Length: 95
Image (cartoon, rainbow, N blue to C red; front, side, top):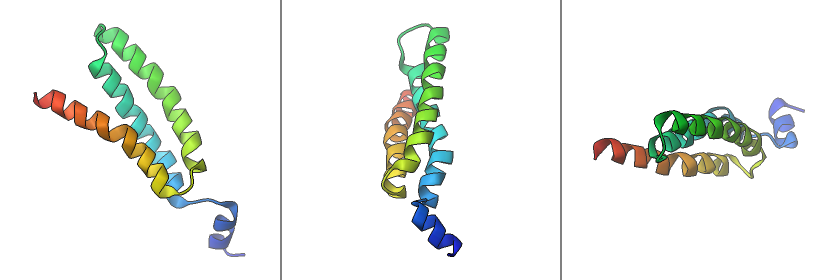
């Protein structure tokens, strides 16, 4: 069996793996930064909440993204989490 055939037989996908390795930490960081920016509490408490949400979210995404149907769906989950938070942070910075 070739490497490609073994990879397909095991159900591995490079896109899903890259989503887990690159997309999961970026999405988790974006959610954590959004919590820090938008929570109506003191900055110290907002940082604690943002950090303590970011780490488990990162781990959960890193575990769940490789199990999704294909790479497009995995990257879509990352974009669905990162996109709205990034837009909100940009609008907050501009206005």
